[in-house]
Image 1 (tube, rainbow, N blue to C red):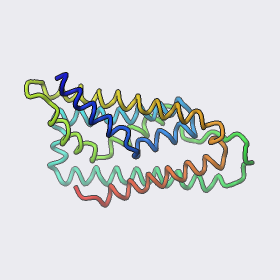
Image 2 (tube, rainbow, N blue to C red; image 1 turned 120 degrees about the vertical axis):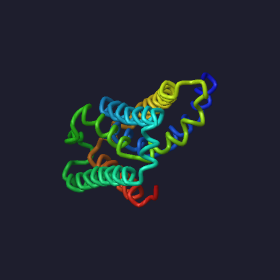
Image 3 (tube, rainbow, N blue to C red; image 1 turned 135 degrees about the vertical axis):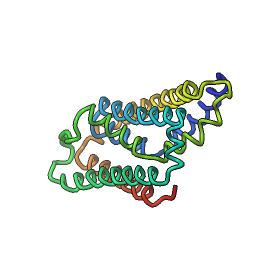
Image 4 (cartoon, rainbow, N blue to C red; image 1 turned 90 degrees about the horizontal axis):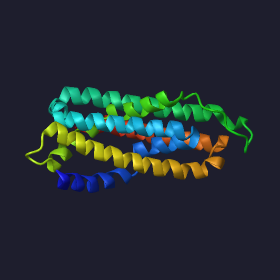
Length: 211
């Protein structure tokens, strides 16, 4: 099991640092809301990852993979959520406009507190069936035959979670250095616009992608 954990840790570390939707969400929270919301978003993302990991180990994700209807329903639900979330950020960025003076402190967004940030991170992962399929394909390759599938899968998912939190903590720390000037209204509009566009792109790609 130790060898399996180390091997999986290397693969998961590479997957963790590859830029993607999770990275964009955490950076956006760190740059426009603050450390607490950013860590809450990261924790929500890792909660979703952990749920998918446990589901894969228990065989539940295999049912999702085998069922075209279930996969399609979850895929469209996830795509709709990502597009809605992305469009709402783009609309908010456009509505704020250049009214605020450049260099003035930016007002807090109506994005809610840490619970809302956690929920956004968790929903983004839980409504993405590709993550469940990924775990179904990946976890069995690292589980020793003598290890209980549920326990082994949970340990592997926790390794991925730990690496994810370390990576997100580094991103949040780096974003904190630049936040003093990225907090300005024009910068926040750019961040929301870019992140919203990324979300819409991911949502459209998820909706159009085959199983």
